[in-house]
Length: 289
Image 1 (cartoon, rainbow, N blue to C red):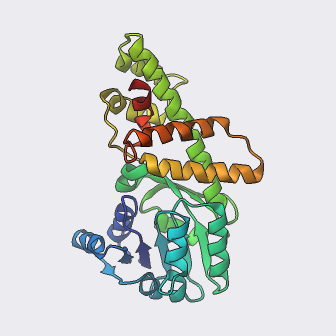
Image 2 (image 1 turned 90 degrees about the horizontal axis):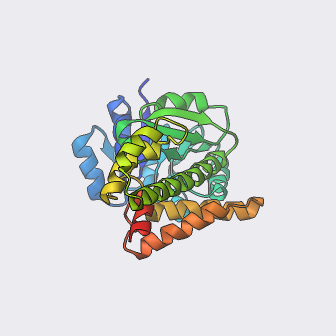
Image 3 (image 1 turned 30 degrees about the vertical axis):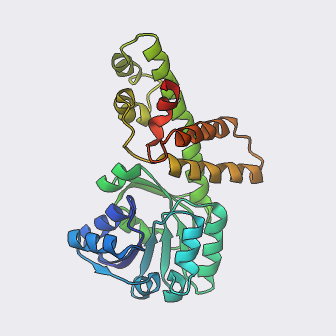
Protein backbone atom coordinates (compact mmCIF):
# COMPACT_ATOMS: atom_id res chain seq x y z
CA UNK A 1 0.00 0.00 0.00
CA UNK A 2 1.35 3.41 -0.99
CA UNK A 3 1.95 5.75 1.95
CA UNK A 4 2.99 9.35 2.39
CA UNK A 5 6.45 9.30 3.94
CA UNK A 6 9.13 11.78 4.96
CA UNK A 7 12.81 10.89 5.18
CA UNK A 8 15.15 13.26 7.00
CA UNK A 9 18.91 12.82 6.65
CA UNK A 10 20.42 11.72 3.34
CA UNK A 11 23.84 10.57 4.47
CA UNK A 12 25.57 7.38 3.36
CA UNK A 13 22.78 5.36 4.99
CA UNK A 14 19.72 7.56 4.62
CA UNK A 15 20.24 8.32 0.93
CA UNK A 16 19.80 4.73 -0.29
CA UNK A 17 17.19 3.93 2.37
CA UNK A 18 14.99 6.77 1.18
CA UNK A 19 15.64 5.59 -2.37
CA UNK A 20 14.28 2.14 -1.58
CA UNK A 21 11.12 3.70 -0.18
CA UNK A 22 10.64 5.65 -3.39
CA UNK A 23 11.26 2.59 -5.56
CA UNK A 24 8.70 0.70 -3.48
CA UNK A 25 6.08 3.15 -4.75
CA UNK A 26 5.67 5.39 -1.69
CA UNK A 27 5.26 9.17 -1.87
CA UNK A 28 8.53 10.32 -0.31
CA UNK A 29 9.43 13.85 0.80
CA UNK A 30 13.08 14.30 1.74
CA UNK A 31 14.97 16.85 3.81
CA UNK A 32 18.72 17.21 4.15
CA UNK A 33 20.66 20.01 5.83
CA UNK A 34 22.61 20.50 2.61
CA UNK A 35 19.93 21.08 -0.05
CA UNK A 36 22.32 20.05 -2.83
CA UNK A 37 22.29 16.49 -1.50
CA UNK A 38 18.51 16.45 -1.51
CA UNK A 39 18.50 17.71 -5.07
CA UNK A 40 20.96 14.99 -6.04
CA UNK A 41 18.57 12.44 -4.52
CA UNK A 42 15.67 13.91 -6.51
CA UNK A 43 17.68 13.57 -9.70
CA UNK A 44 17.89 9.85 -9.01
CA UNK A 45 14.54 9.03 -7.39
CA UNK A 46 10.93 10.16 -7.53
CA UNK A 47 9.86 12.38 -4.66
CA UNK A 48 9.73 15.88 -3.27
CA UNK A 49 12.14 18.09 -1.37
CA UNK A 50 11.20 20.03 1.74
CA UNK A 51 13.04 23.09 3.04
CA UNK A 52 12.60 22.22 6.74
CA UNK A 53 11.98 19.10 8.83
CA UNK A 54 8.67 20.68 9.89
CA UNK A 55 7.48 20.96 6.31
CA UNK A 56 8.58 17.40 5.56
CA UNK A 57 6.53 16.11 8.49
CA UNK A 58 3.36 18.10 7.75
CA UNK A 59 1.92 15.83 5.07
CA UNK A 60 3.61 12.54 5.96
CA UNK A 61 1.98 9.65 7.80
CA UNK A 62 5.34 8.20 8.84
CA UNK A 63 8.48 10.29 9.36
CA UNK A 64 11.83 8.50 9.10
CA UNK A 65 15.09 10.00 10.33
CA UNK A 66 18.73 9.01 10.02
CA UNK A 67 21.01 11.76 11.31
CA UNK A 68 24.32 11.92 13.18
CA UNK A 69 24.02 11.82 16.97
CA UNK A 70 21.97 12.84 20.02
CA UNK A 71 22.44 16.57 19.46
CA UNK A 72 21.52 16.30 15.77
CA UNK A 73 18.38 14.38 16.66
CA UNK A 74 17.32 16.96 19.26
CA UNK A 75 17.85 19.76 16.74
CA UNK A 76 15.93 18.00 13.97
CA UNK A 77 13.08 17.05 16.28
CA UNK A 78 12.78 19.98 18.69
CA UNK A 79 14.04 23.01 16.75
CA UNK A 80 11.77 25.89 15.76
CA UNK A 81 11.30 24.29 12.33
CA UNK A 82 11.79 20.75 13.60
CA UNK A 83 9.76 17.61 13.01
CA UNK A 84 7.73 18.06 16.19
CA UNK A 85 6.35 21.37 14.93
CA UNK A 86 4.89 19.58 11.92
CA UNK A 87 3.41 16.60 13.73
CA UNK A 88 -0.26 15.97 14.35
CA UNK A 89 -2.13 13.23 16.18
CA UNK A 90 -1.85 9.73 14.78
CA UNK A 91 1.46 10.12 12.98
CA UNK A 92 4.46 7.85 13.53
CA UNK A 93 8.13 8.78 13.86
CA UNK A 94 10.80 6.15 13.16
CA UNK A 95 14.35 7.13 14.06
CA UNK A 96 17.18 5.13 12.47
CA UNK A 97 19.92 7.24 14.07
CA UNK A 98 22.25 5.44 16.47
CA UNK A 99 21.83 7.43 19.69
CA UNK A 100 21.70 6.97 23.43
CA UNK A 101 18.65 5.24 24.86
CA UNK A 102 18.13 8.36 26.97
CA UNK A 103 17.53 10.66 24.00
CA UNK A 104 15.23 8.09 22.40
CA UNK A 105 13.07 8.20 25.51
CA UNK A 106 13.16 12.01 25.48
CA UNK A 107 11.89 12.08 21.91
CA UNK A 108 9.19 9.53 22.69
CA UNK A 109 7.88 11.68 25.54
CA UNK A 110 7.88 14.78 23.33
CA UNK A 111 5.95 12.88 20.65
CA UNK A 112 3.50 11.46 23.19
CA UNK A 113 2.41 15.00 24.09
CA UNK A 114 1.02 15.20 20.54
CA UNK A 115 -0.34 11.64 20.56
CA UNK A 116 2.37 10.58 18.13
CA UNK A 117 4.18 7.23 18.35
CA UNK A 118 7.98 7.18 18.38
CA UNK A 119 10.11 4.16 17.50
CA UNK A 120 13.87 4.04 17.95
CA UNK A 121 15.10 1.80 15.15
CA UNK A 122 18.88 1.76 14.67
CA UNK A 123 20.21 -0.40 11.87
CA UNK A 124 23.06 -2.81 11.23
CA UNK A 125 24.53 -3.77 7.89
CA UNK A 126 26.47 -0.65 6.95
CA UNK A 127 26.46 1.28 3.72
CA UNK A 128 26.42 -1.86 1.58
CA UNK A 129 23.43 -3.18 3.49
CA UNK A 130 21.60 0.11 2.96
CA UNK A 131 22.39 0.15 -0.75
CA UNK A 132 21.28 -3.45 -1.21
CA UNK A 133 18.19 -3.15 0.99
CA UNK A 134 19.56 -5.79 3.35
CA UNK A 135 19.67 -4.00 6.70
CA UNK A 136 18.81 -5.48 10.08
CA UNK A 137 16.66 -3.18 12.21
CA UNK A 138 16.44 -3.25 16.01
CA UNK A 139 13.25 -1.53 17.16
CA UNK A 140 12.04 -0.11 20.44
CA UNK A 141 8.51 1.21 20.99
CA UNK A 142 4.89 0.23 21.50
CA UNK A 143 3.62 -2.89 19.79
CA UNK A 144 0.42 -1.06 18.82
CA UNK A 145 1.45 -0.01 15.30
CA UNK A 146 4.63 -1.99 14.66
CA UNK A 147 2.70 -4.19 12.23
CA UNK A 148 1.87 -1.04 10.27
CA UNK A 149 5.46 0.12 9.85
CA UNK A 150 7.13 -3.27 9.34
CA UNK A 151 6.00 -3.66 5.69
CA UNK A 152 7.44 -0.20 4.98
CA UNK A 153 10.72 -1.09 6.67
CA UNK A 154 10.92 -4.16 4.45
CA UNK A 155 11.81 -1.85 1.55
CA UNK A 156 15.37 -1.74 2.89
CA UNK A 157 15.48 -4.41 5.60
CA UNK A 158 16.06 -8.14 5.43
CA UNK A 159 14.94 -8.41 9.07
CA UNK A 160 13.34 -6.13 11.65
CA UNK A 161 12.26 -6.96 15.17
CA UNK A 162 10.46 -5.12 17.97
CA UNK A 163 12.53 -5.76 21.09
CA UNK A 164 10.70 -3.89 23.82
CA UNK A 165 9.75 -0.34 24.89
CA UNK A 166 11.37 2.81 23.52
CA UNK A 167 15.13 2.67 24.05
CA UNK A 168 15.32 -1.08 23.45
CA UNK A 169 16.42 -0.60 19.85
CA UNK A 170 19.33 1.58 20.95
CA UNK A 171 20.33 -0.84 23.69
CA UNK A 172 20.34 -3.68 21.15
CA UNK A 173 22.51 -1.59 18.81
CA UNK A 174 24.98 -1.09 21.67
CA UNK A 175 25.15 -4.86 22.08
CA UNK A 176 25.70 -5.18 18.33
CA UNK A 177 28.63 -2.74 18.38
CA UNK A 178 30.15 -4.40 21.45
CA UNK A 179 30.16 -7.71 19.55
CA UNK A 180 31.65 -6.18 16.40
CA UNK A 181 34.46 -4.46 18.29
CA UNK A 182 35.63 -7.73 19.83
CA UNK A 183 35.26 -9.73 16.62
CA UNK A 184 37.23 -7.26 14.50
CA UNK A 185 40.02 -7.06 17.05
CA UNK A 186 40.27 -10.86 17.12
CA UNK A 187 40.40 -11.01 13.32
CA UNK A 188 43.05 -8.27 13.20
CA UNK A 189 45.22 -10.11 15.73
CA UNK A 190 44.86 -13.41 13.87
CA UNK A 191 45.92 -11.84 10.56
CA UNK A 192 48.78 -9.99 12.26
CA UNK A 193 49.94 -13.26 13.81
CA UNK A 194 49.64 -15.14 10.52
CA UNK A 195 51.55 -12.53 8.53
CA UNK A 196 54.39 -12.50 11.05
CA UNK A 197 54.48 -16.30 11.00
CA UNK A 198 54.81 -16.35 7.21
CA UNK A 199 51.47 -18.03 6.64
CA UNK A 200 49.33 -17.79 3.52
CA UNK A 201 46.60 -15.93 5.37
CA UNK A 202 44.10 -16.13 2.51
CA UNK A 203 44.42 -19.90 2.47
CA UNK A 204 44.07 -20.07 6.25
CA UNK A 205 40.94 -17.93 6.21
CA UNK A 206 39.46 -20.17 3.52
CA UNK A 207 39.80 -23.05 5.97
CA UNK A 208 38.89 -21.48 9.30
CA UNK A 209 35.95 -19.54 7.87
CA UNK A 210 34.29 -22.93 7.39
CA UNK A 211 34.52 -23.65 11.11
CA UNK A 212 33.71 -22.09 14.48
CA UNK A 213 35.82 -18.96 13.82
CA UNK A 214 33.56 -17.87 10.96
CA UNK A 215 32.08 -14.37 11.08
CA UNK A 216 30.69 -11.75 8.72
CA UNK A 217 33.78 -9.64 9.36
CA UNK A 218 36.07 -12.52 8.44
CA UNK A 219 34.29 -13.31 5.19
CA UNK A 220 33.79 -9.72 4.07
CA UNK A 221 36.86 -7.87 5.32
CA UNK A 222 39.92 -10.13 5.42
CA UNK A 223 40.92 -9.56 1.78
CA UNK A 224 40.89 -5.79 2.06
CA UNK A 225 42.60 -5.95 5.45
CA UNK A 226 45.45 -7.99 3.95
CA UNK A 227 45.77 -5.38 1.18
CA UNK A 228 45.81 -2.53 3.70
CA UNK A 229 42.66 -1.08 2.17
CA UNK A 230 40.30 0.52 4.65
CA UNK A 231 37.81 2.49 2.58
CA UNK A 232 34.89 0.10 3.09
CA UNK A 233 31.98 0.27 5.48
CA UNK A 234 31.57 1.98 8.84
CA UNK A 235 34.10 4.71 9.72
CA UNK A 236 36.24 4.63 12.86
CA UNK A 237 34.88 8.04 13.95
CA UNK A 238 31.36 6.65 13.97
CA UNK A 239 32.39 3.44 15.71
CA UNK A 240 34.00 5.42 18.51
CA UNK A 241 30.81 7.47 18.85
CA UNK A 242 28.80 4.25 19.18
CA UNK A 243 31.22 2.63 21.62
CA UNK A 244 31.19 5.75 23.79
CA UNK A 245 27.39 5.49 23.97
CA UNK A 246 27.70 1.83 25.01
CA UNK A 247 30.38 2.54 27.61
CA UNK A 248 28.34 5.38 29.13
CA UNK A 249 25.27 3.15 29.29
CA UNK A 250 27.38 0.41 30.91
CA UNK A 251 28.36 2.79 33.71
CA UNK A 252 24.71 3.48 34.38
CA UNK A 253 23.52 -0.13 34.39
CA UNK A 254 26.51 -1.58 36.23
CA UNK A 255 28.02 -3.55 33.35
CA UNK A 256 31.74 -4.22 33.05
CA UNK A 257 33.05 -3.99 29.47
CA UNK A 258 36.84 -4.35 29.63
CA UNK A 259 37.28 -5.60 26.05
CA UNK A 260 35.06 -2.89 24.62
CA UNK A 261 36.95 -0.19 26.51
CA UNK A 262 40.27 -1.59 25.30
CA UNK A 263 39.23 -1.79 21.65
CA UNK A 264 37.83 1.73 21.90
CA UNK A 265 41.32 2.91 22.85
CA UNK A 266 42.80 0.97 19.95
CA UNK A 267 40.42 2.85 17.65
CA UNK A 268 41.62 6.10 19.25
CA UNK A 269 45.14 5.13 18.16
CA UNK A 270 43.88 4.54 14.62
CA UNK A 271 42.32 8.00 14.67
CA UNK A 272 45.60 9.53 15.82
CA UNK A 273 47.37 7.80 12.93
CA UNK A 274 45.08 9.53 10.44
CA UNK A 275 42.46 6.80 10.18
CA UNK A 276 39.37 8.71 11.30
CA UNK A 277 37.52 7.85 8.10
CA UNK A 278 38.97 4.37 7.67
CA UNK A 279 36.53 1.53 8.21
CA UNK A 280 36.47 -0.47 11.42
CA UNK A 281 38.66 -3.26 10.04
CA UNK A 282 41.61 -0.83 10.24
CA UNK A 283 42.51 -2.25 13.64
CA UNK A 284 45.02 -4.35 11.67
CA UNK A 285 46.80 -1.17 10.51
CA UNK A 286 47.55 -0.35 14.14
CA UNK A 287 49.25 -3.73 14.59
CA UNK A 288 51.16 -3.66 11.29
CA UNK A 289 52.65 -0.17 11.62
